[in-house]
Amino acid sequence: MGWFSTSADEKRKEEVRTGARAPDRTERKQCWDARDGFYRCLDKNNVVDSLTGEGKKIADKQCATEHKAFEENCASAWVTYFKRYRVAEHKKKETLARLEKEGANRMAVEGPGDTPGSKKI
Amino acid sequence: MSRSLAAPQKLLRPLLQSCPRTQQQQQCQRFLSTQSSSCRPRRPTTAQRCTLDSQSTSVSSPSRPFLEQRRYKAKTVEEAKSRYRTGPFSWKAGLLFVVTSAGLVWYFEHEKQRMQRKRIAEATKGVGRPKVGGEFQLVDQDGRPFSSGDLKGRYSLIYFGFTHCPDICPEELDKMARMFDLVEEKAPGALTPVFVTCDPQRDDPKILKAYLAEFHERFVGLTGTYEQIKDMCKAYRVYFSTPRDVPAGKDYLVDHSIYFYLMDPEGDFVEALGRQHSPEQAARVILEHMKDWKR
Image (tube, rainbow over all chains, first blue to last red; front, side):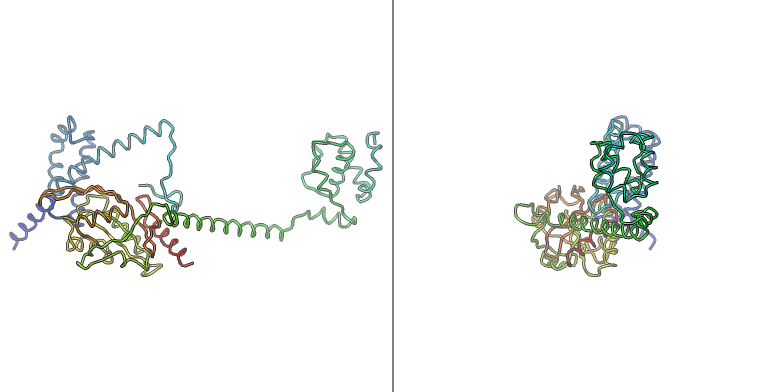
């Protein structure tokens, strides 16, 4: 029984990894946790882009364990997506910071149903 | 009294008669001794008004002609005195003022918000406006046919996504579930929550059913053929980048618009709710539109 369930779990995990099956809530949670672990390691090593160049080298060397967990728990398409997302998010933050420094005003992008002071995402 | 006041005495007589003599003298003296600027009344009382009148007539200051219009004649000394004591204000007048202003402010704010919602709701109706939404024919998560007609008669909240979505759709679907619960609390049965997949190749009814069950049992999940979904997305102005005919086993992600589309009971687009709305805010917006509809 133990053997059977383990192999079924493995099969399911494999399906999630290859994208044959969409992950459910717990699997998504596991993936996000693994992703956050990987992100934390990248933060520690000051790596933004773990896909190319120097960043990839450092990430491969310093964050191998985290990367392995990340790949194990997430669909491969998601792994690439989250790595790219990190870069895009960083650029966005940089641009915002630059604009703010230049004295740009932040425009409210809220709908008319919004109240001021609402939580921004 | 100097000569300057002596000449227009004739002109001032009717006014001076209404003021107590001594007080008037006092005021005029003060007016003469200090310059005109320091004599300006902080409170328009009778005695001071007399001074003002004498000021405007005798010294004839053309820079303040409006003072002429503020003339007030008390008929008796008693009246003048009582008026001097209470002034034009009383607590009743104050209360009336406050209540009236508060009422007006509330009314105008209320109407402004209503008109704003109405404008949003009607911006997409009528001739020459971009039309969002339209007829469709898809299947729900139980494999039953589901068309645009099934949404008529109620508001509907439509969200586009796909089950392999990495982070945004699951978050947004959780938000949608919360939003729906909030609306359902206040207006049971008035809203249909709909999830339309942008990835029909992988998301068949069975998968949709399992996926949506994790978020809310009342969600309607719609799928169809690639062409049907493409038309649906086009009708709702949803951008999506689903590749066609991907070989089985190859993973891919889909880019798509991430708005909740609020549609009215006639199937017309009302408003798009986005990531910036919290579930509470979004539910409030929806409920407000619903209130407008009943009118």
